[in-house]
Length: 140
Image (cartoon, rainbow, N blue to C red; front, top):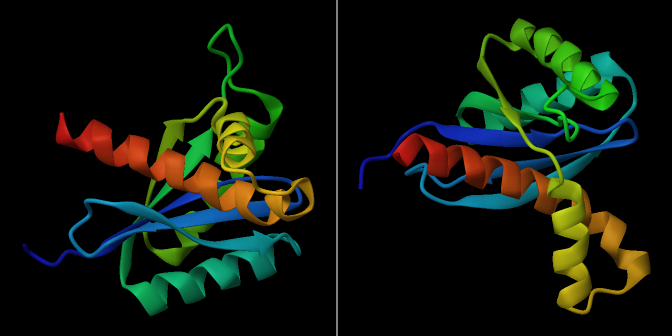
């Protein structure tokens, strides 16, 4: 299979951001890390390091909507953060991602993760769901 530049997915949060990454064929999304928020400047620098280390060409950023299809407050903050990420000279794509955090929580519960450890993984899992949804949409 042809090697391509990777794509990362971000589950934006006020306290933490989950990050997932594709393989080199852009086929599979997998959890990468959690960025503990320290302010936009430091957060963007951490993302810049990820872009360099993994040869990333695109960031897919989750934007949650409510039941009426309106962007939520956290969704608006995610979009504003995405606009700041454009300084990294990388393509940014927004994707609707309602309920990924709940799905990630439910999945970890079903697999028997202890509540204490769950928060260490939930953001990475949510980012993986966002990125996998994006990859699926690109294959159609």
